[in-house]
Length: 168
Length: 179
Image (spheres, each protein chain N blue to C red):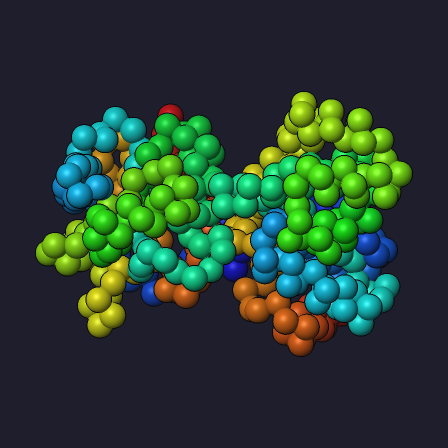
């Protein structure tokens, strides 16, 4: 797994998630009830794929809200940020509206968690996604991945380091 | 474990001696209720350790979530440029429920700062770059919400109640001694 020097990117139980060097499995998921997004449409620029357990976590500055604030930094690298959870498109819509999120949330809803499973980022016992991060390069290859303990918001330092480490 | 990537310099707002055994860095947002809750706890922790502890505050406004957070951070920086950072920092947290231009001007007046200059600084975003630099440095250091604390450069992932913070600081003091 590609590692940056950022100290919180050491995989803790990241054995299961797809590692750097793997071709990112393609997928098409709903962004809104009547719109879908296909990963391969984003070829040509880096993609940050952030799997997270659920919308509406009760903390201030939760992972998605934090990434929303950091979006301008991600965009400096031309990167697209996609959040993925097993919540449905209607749920995502309400969540994104309340938190003023400016990036798409994908619904890995039916079959439930199918995309997360492909990335090794599904917690079958809980029925929701891991807190797993993937930085996919412009050619669709996973350049960096990291799985955080479910209770720990991984922050964004690992993502930024991985974006910086991408070949120009 | 995440570590502080931006070293503490003379530009930082610090309370306590540079020679203190432990430096506690807080990345905070004046509108965040958790930071509001942490504010008196941090003061208790400072009282507890006295000169053995240095506190540094850096801005991490979550402005998409908190509409007044960015302006409040800039107000504190404005006061800081005139040597009154902590006075403003404290008053902002103490009046967290009323953040907004009326309060900012009122606090400016109470601290004998020019309200014309304050209003102008806010309009022109005179301190925006400074606040943004704090934010970016925080992101690079693994700040993952507010408040995020660093104890001698290591992110404190535990809770920020008095006992937990005191014990984490004691632990850092032990490490500092044996190092």
